[in-house]
View 1 (cartoon, chains in turn red, cyan):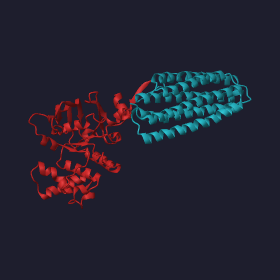
View 2: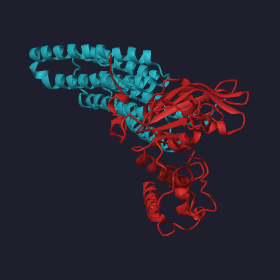
View 3: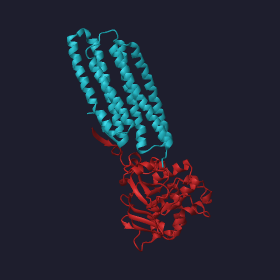
View 4: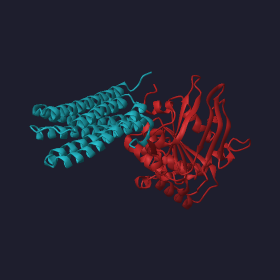
Amino acid sequence: MNPIRSFADLIPDAVPAAESRQGAERSIAIRGLAAYYGKHKAIEGIDLDIGPGVITAIIGPSGCGKSTLIRCINRMHEVIAGAYATGSVTLDGTDIYTPGSDPVQIRRRIGMVFQKPNPFPTRTVYENVIAGLRLNLPRKSKADYDEVVERSLRSVALWDEVKDKLHDAGTALSGGQQQRLCIARAIAIKPEVLLLDEPCSALDPTATLKIEDLLFSLKIDYTIVIVTHNMQQAARASDRTAFLMADENHVGHLVEAGPTREIFLKPKDSRTEDYISGRLG
Amino acid sequence: MQTRIHFMEELARLNHDILTMGIKVEENLRKALEAFKTQDIELARDAKAGDEVVNALQLKIQDQAAILIATQQPVARDLRELVSIFKVTDNLERAGDHATHLAKAAIKLAGEQPTRQISRIETMVETCCAMIRGAVDAWINHDVEEARKIAAMDKEVDLEHKALVRDVLEFIKEHPELADRASRVLNNSGYLERVGDHMTNICEAVVYMVEGSHVELKD
């Protein structure tokens, strides 16, 4: 009657952190994080480590604070009037909420992609990719911009599809292409972290799988956090999963975080099991 | 709020079929034993025919489990339950085959004087039937404690088998002219010993389904 092994022991980590390009860099540590919209507390007591070289999925029912949490990771939360956060979010050991730190610089290091593809409507594909560079950094030469556009579009597997349409409107692309263009725009400024808030919810299954494949190829170079409502997507496309749930006062808490394979095969908390099994109404 | 009602109903239906499969295997085993004891060829044929029902149930359950995996995307315990159903039904089907072996032996040995080991075979069948019932109940009720108790019964079957082997060897020394008949009894004891192993496998599947860990319940 001896337990001989657990499922998880048999499978090595999907991508060991050591394989990532920058090793231990690009790590995020969230401690005691609470976020408010005016007097309403949206999340509290969040302690979460987000490692480099892996994709971390944040899942949970509507209203549990998933989007609020990732918006706190690059200080986008405070953009909303009356919204603020307490606690700490450190990137490579530096607290991004330290008084005096520049949110714009933080957002350069921590890029974000939103639910609905949002290329700048009056800009071409080319201009969309370099929009962040033009806003944030000293002007570069045309050759430098050309290099960034090609590199960024190749990174998101879009180059071959749009290389002859670089000067067409970004909005002329398909929905899936537009979302990959937005990811290209986000990585053109070489952030360390990429936050994606339900990036596939407006896309068809084929475009969704392309984005998921893309994330796998990008995770070597970026710390990736994805918020998703789609449990199968979290199971397919992430290495670690964090499950959030709101309490009776509608305040979101972290219930459980761990390797995705464990969360989806053998979660520790019965609330996680109920949610991922679809039993949490 | 209860959700996934359809999925839960489908799972319940599968487990109902597993229960039916277990009942049928036990019934066939008892019929085969009775045929063995009474040399009732018709009853033995009935037990053999019953195995076709067991085989059909195995395929039906496994097909339905595959459909649920494909269409419902189960995770966590639901997933462990559905993948373990293949192990449970495979082992029940093998146990059913051993009941058929006993029925076939009953047909072959019909008309010959039973050897003295029949009482040991009877004891083993009783223990095996208790294990079949207990293992299936533990599965249906997700009862790990019961599964461990049932698996422990396999030791009784093994001990009885070993005692029967010793007895048969003695018997052959005493009655070499009955060696062929005695060896058939020995074969059947071996089949019953395997039934105990198959039920232990089901008990291990219960632990995996409930706790998510692989355990070795056989001593």
